[in-house]
Amino acid sequence: MQKGVILMDFAEKISKTPTHLAIATVPMQPWEQPYSPEKALAEGTIFPCLNLPFFIGGEAHV
Image (tube, rainbow, N blue to C red; front, top):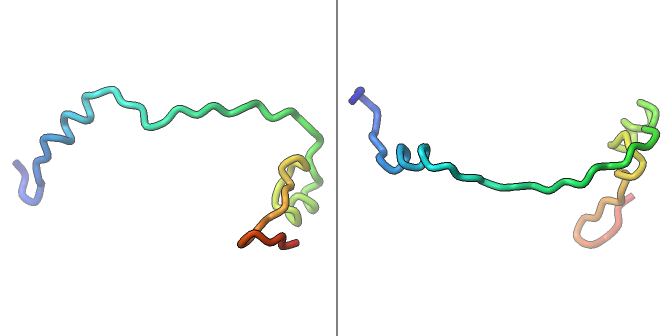
């Protein structure tokens, strides 16, 4: 064993076990005309359908 290296038996066993951290299901986003670069920068998104209100503490902040 190298100096300063700690042997962890459990780590070796975990790396040989096929595990999945998560499986995501993401629906396809329909294509739409994006904002112009200037408007997208101002709005924080390029797609109008993703331009949603932002709530802090349950109140709308515009």
